[in-house]
Structure formats: structure tokens, C-alpha cells
Image 1 (cartoon, rainbow, N blue to C red):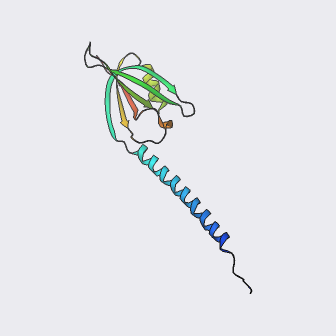
Image 2 (spheres, rainbow, N blue to C red; image 1 turned 45 degrees about the vertical axis):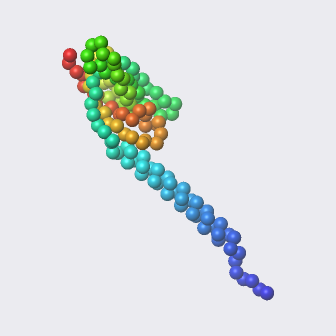
Length: 133
């Protein structure tokens, strides 16, 4: 009995290894596309006014500017706090210079970003202007 056929084991292992690598590659590509779409398209955009009461650069590895905007409709009202993130250093500098003054910030809300490396909040401020009283 002369058996010249190759054993099925090695080719099956090669196919399984190729399948696992392709599955991992597909997951990485899909994850990248999801992250890109969540960052590219905003869920909402808006503007809020108030006083920046806290602003600092935070993070262990990914440093982002995080802030709080105290909003009150009229004197004596209970204030609401709007938590936001800033990526642009130029905007962060403008915010730092406007501490204690009434400002209006323009933001975009990005829902579903996969990590906190993008920021601690869903609200990303991209512009600021001082509001005259």
C-alpha cells in the first residue's frame, strides 16, 4: 500500500490560521471605520452661554482639555453645568483667557466614540466668543 497523498492536518491548519488572521483584520478595519464615522459626523451641534468655572488638561496618555461651563438663566437661579472637551490648543488658549467672563461656546456632540482618548465628554467645543452683558 503506497499512500502518496499529503496529510490533511497541515493544510487545514493553514486555512484556519488564514481565516483567523482575516477575521482579525476585518474587525480592525470595521472598528476603524466605526471610529472614523463617529468622529466625522456629529449627532448634534449647538451653542451654550455661561461662565467657564473649571478648565484643565487631563489624561494619563491622551491629554485633552476638559472644562465646565456654569449656566444660569437669571440671578438667583440654580445653575446648570455643561461639561465639555476641547481638542484645539488655540481654542483652549482663548477659553483660558476668558475665565470669569460670560462666554458663548459652539460645540458638536459626537456619540459613541470608543475610548476616552477623544475626551471625557461627548461635547467638543470648537469656537468661543465673549458675550457682552
